[in-house]
Amino acid sequence: MSLYRYVSAKDDLLLLMQEQAIGLPPEPEPDADWRARLVQLFTAQVAMFVAHPWVLSLPIQGTPVTPNSSAWLDAALEALAPTALSEQEQVAVALLIAGQARFCGMVLAGYSDRVRRSGQHPDAITAEEAGLYDALISAEEFPALRRAVDAGVFASDADPFRFGLERCLDGVAAYVAELDGGAPHAEPAEWAATEDLALLADKRYREAQKAVREAQKALRDARRLERQARREAGERLARGRREA
Image 1 (tube, rainbow, N blue to C red):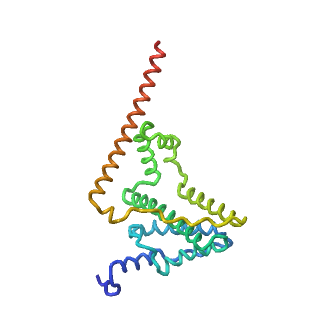
Image 2 (cartoon, rainbow, N blue to C red; image 1 turned 135 degrees about the horizontal axis):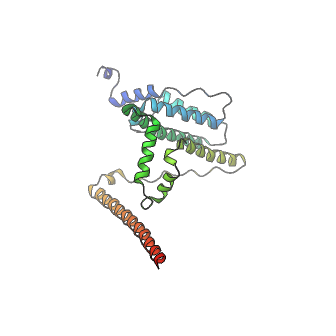
Image 3 (cartoon, one colour; image 1 turned 90 degrees about the vertical axis):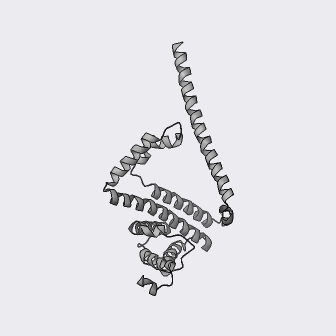
């Protein structure tokens, strides 16, 4: 409680704690181009989230204009400055990298906590999860997911987050190449529409949404039963033809 002699509210204290945890971005590697620099920043942010997972639990209530958080954004924009991207496009790419890093950090921090609490080796956790998918995911209910299970995706050592990051950067690189070739900048997209918060607070509206979700689940279950019945009917027909 003595800390409150120096800050005016809990939110201010959390902001200062976050500022201390995120620190400053790493220095650029020698001769790194914009893409390599963004990968470096992504990797450093993920490592920060794993080291300080409590940061992920802090609500995002806007862009924190603090020295360290500003330094991370500035580093990403500095990396993109030599490209033909506009300032608005540079900020959008910087937010893309930050979002990818946050999600990856959230997942890795969760696994790290599980390893620490359970004492399991990460490979054992992977094998356990792959076994659960193999046992619980049926081709009738989740056909696409079952194909991924059979392909060994959930037992693979491949990093899906790094693959996704690289494909995002491929898209940015292709767009930059188009700009270098004389193509015009893309029209800025508008914010995606979201439902009014006051509307979401209405009890009857929430109940109606719940009814829709339940109906969707019932329809999904019915379609699963239909696929299963179709498969079994096909098997019976095939047996009948062989016996005939």
